[in-house]
Image (cartoon, rainbow, N blue to C red):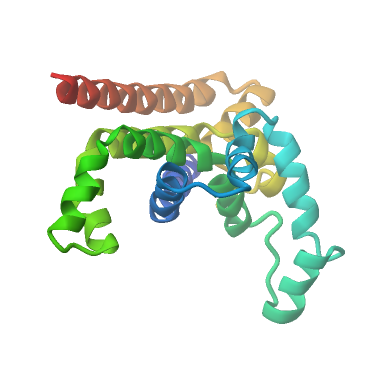
Amino acid sequence: MSSEFIQTLFLTAKLALSTTLILFVIGLPIAALLAFTRFRLKVIFEALINMPMVLPPTVIGYYLLVAFSPQHAFGGLLERWFDLRLAFTFQGVLIASVIFSLPFMVQPLQNGFVALPKSYREAAYTLGKSKMETFFRVLVPNIKPSIVTAIAMTFAHSIGEFGIVLMVGGNMPGETRVASIAIYDEVQSLNYSTANHYSLILFAVSFVLLVIIYSVNRHFRI
């Protein structure tokens, strides 16, 4: 295996792990908010979170690329205040990946919270537990299958994303070239052997993650 092959796989794993970790931290409170509270604009909020599931990745990628441009407000502000450009960088791809994978983390967690009996929270409050203690010591431990599913789905989705990564990051070896982009690039170069190696690895990782999801859910159903 060439150093570029290893570097591309390392960058793919780095993007998927970073995306999953960030989304787990922000996905838990968002899922709890959607599961346990009612507010006037909840439908709009839910629709915005789940938009990546119906929008073509290139649409979101295009808007992010425009937003990251120094010629527009957000990109110009980042450049003037922080000397930071996000377009065609790993940081930009990571932000795009987090936005695009958000529903894959939030939906399983939200379903897990909704399925919990209300009596869990009521019993915890009766015993004097605060809302924070109830959340981390009662609710979160009781949605383990949903957590495993959310993490596995987010990771698998992140390693396979193509359109949004190409739009925001391009195809820069060592910076933004992940495995899904490399497969397309190798096929365009008629280098089917390397494309096959990338594809087999992504296939195997996705298969293992799905086996984990089904095994965990089956275990908890029994």
